Image (cartoon, rainbow, N blue to C red; front, side, top):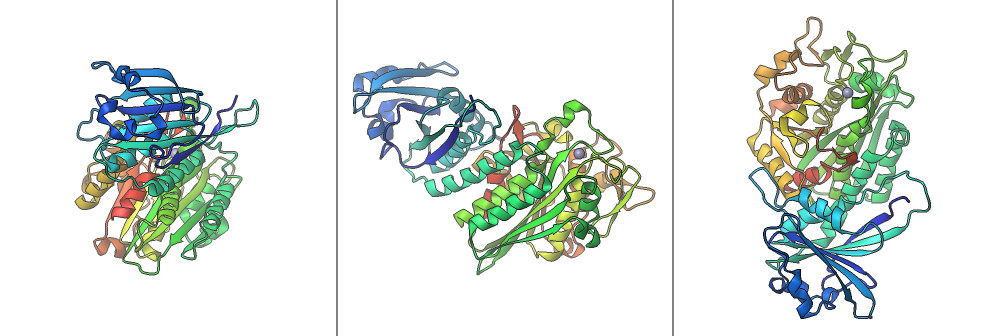
Length: 501
Ligand SMILES: [Zn+2]
């Protein structure tokens, strides 16, 4: 049977319990699940069925790593209810977030029933933890599946928080950001035959229509127009595919603009490697090579719907192409002229992301007058080695921007960690005899993830960099997927970064 379509509904459900919910799950860091210590739980109508004496065994045994207790009680209407209390490990060292989003998500997966409505209560210290906790829980029920076997049922998981310090949770913000994150997951999970560049363009248009905001607009440069206007990277990479490449720019420009942020996402809807063909094992999952663009689109949706950055103009650039093979495919030894005007000798057609991003950041920095340009991409296999499968790797010359993206990661659970910034040492890796640069490093054992970021940076408009404006590169190759499923990594991260910029 296919998994049901799960709606996630955040709200003050402890104060006003949803009717008819027979499965209730309380998740809390180890040591937090003492009902008498959490008035929000004991005073809640949702849990009134728990007799005082029944609460005693719910004090989970100390020293257990993943302890849980499930008991059956009788609801106010006399029907049976299943109540589970479970611990998750919340041990955090300095590079983890405000709470262990990974452990909380795993606990939700284990303890929340797969079907039927459910109420989930997460025990947190404060509203900031609730935000990260809500996003972690929401990621647990992906929207995309093509399993057959019957109609997909719909069900709702109601989520609330028992907040120890009593601070108020912003359910509206959480609802909107979580929706954008789940949309991001859905787009990344979608099979490439269902998310071609052309369908992706339509999806972006549909989002603009759905947002129905007079301050939102969309610009699309597609197919041959890219070649004619000088987007040698997008055109070169995407011209061999059945559906044409495209640069999509979604803009939200409020009445009063104090700052402008440009977010540029890699949107390779499928990456077989091109003529530098990937082996099967590393080609499978390459539907996720558009994860950066999905994160940008998700962040844009969240920023517009929440209004969290009311005086910030946001431009979301999706660099869409399929890296495919046919007689027109770009080749090793080709030289492409990117939108920056710089020439690139192709030495590896599988290093295509930086070519489309080079065009994207060149366009953004030249035409959109941004105060910061951020690019995000599933860019390098080396990112796995640099910062692992949970943390994105970030590159910037600006220490303040670096601190802001790390903080945004800790707030949202989309973790990040900085790479070395040393273009003097790394750009010589791209030295070419016949062009301004090659598209791949000479030495793979020399910080090649950071080098790839410097490659993208090299295509920023000279006036933008000359003005000392910051550039930030985010590589999410590792964290974009987990166990064969999209995580939505980057959407909440860029939302939070832009909100605080
Ligand atoms: Zn590639």
